[in-house]
Amino acid sequence: MELPPGCMLQTQGSTQVCRLRKSLYGLKQSSRAWFGRFTKFMKSIGYKQSNSDHILFLKGNKRAIIALIVYVNDMIVTGNDPKEKEALQNHLAQEFKMKSLGHLKHFIGIEVSRLKEGIFLSQRKHALDLLKETDMTVCSLLSTPIEENLKLSIHPQQIHTNKERYQRLVGRLMYPVHTRPDLAYVLSVISQFMHSPSEEHMKVVTRVLRYLKSSPGKGILFTKGENLNIEGFTNVDWAGSIEDRRFTSGYFTFMGGILVTWRSKKQEVVARSSAEAE
Image (tube, rainbow, N blue to C red):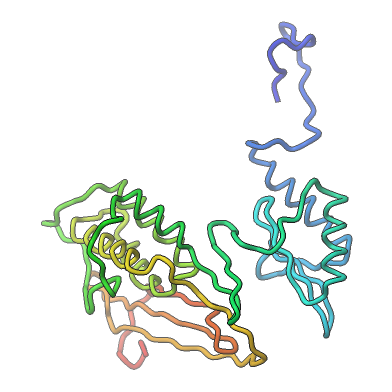
């Protein structure tokens, strides 16, 4: 770090430098230093860092469990042990400057509602902000995000569209997929043409916005229940891509009847038969 202007030690030809004792916002190493310190503290009070997701910390036994997930400096604490949860909050308050905001209502753009049936997650505000930004607040509504059996491709005679606008819209639409599995497939399709979008591709993006306008408050409901059975469903199309004959696969996983994971992805290899694709 260079000496700040006006420093008494700043003289011509001086070799003195500033010693960094505390990470500052804006520095590349600040986030890594902060998370390293936080991880060390969590381990010191008996929490284990998840191997599958490093921002998740767990502590518990056969009867009780406490989970903490952190995103930058926002945290969610949950579990079925009230005493341990209160102790964790006290430990955090002593080590860091923070405060409890009560029951979770909003986290990184995801709205959390507590209902009699369970907990409902949605991104209604994000959807409405996107519609307002694109001047789509007043438009005709559609019941599906993409036409059935629509095949998109890149061809020499295509009419090109604004590349930066297309990329921005697709990027903004990718975020609601966290609570909108119905958008997973269409987003996996239109994101394949980010490098060379055409008017045909932009029409599909506009259709997604019109579909979003018809149901901005859709989301996922986590209901109460003791059933923990795991069920999975998958499907794949045969040579769905016109350009390279690759297929697109998708899957949904349910735990206790609640949707927990989903994905739609274009495969990296070409299937040699319909049996192999299925």
